[in-house]
Length: 66
Image 1 (cartoon, rainbow, N blue to C red):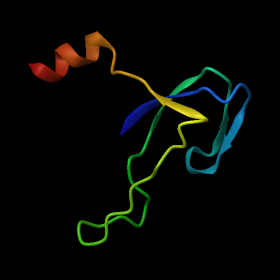
Image 2: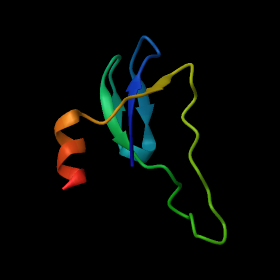
Image 3: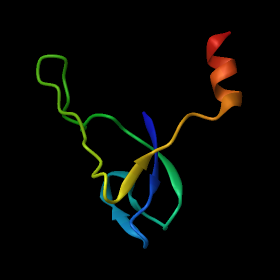
């Protein structure tokens, strides 16, 4: 999973999440399509003109390091 922010300037319909993501909203999204396998990787590419990668919050990073 990755964290991305909607930077499109308006709401985006995201069928993969079964909802609409509002402008400037940060959401967790899958990195691979549902039919992905190790033999046939199917990465999801979130377009840079609509989505921006967001760093994981520091509190979550410190818990992951434990």
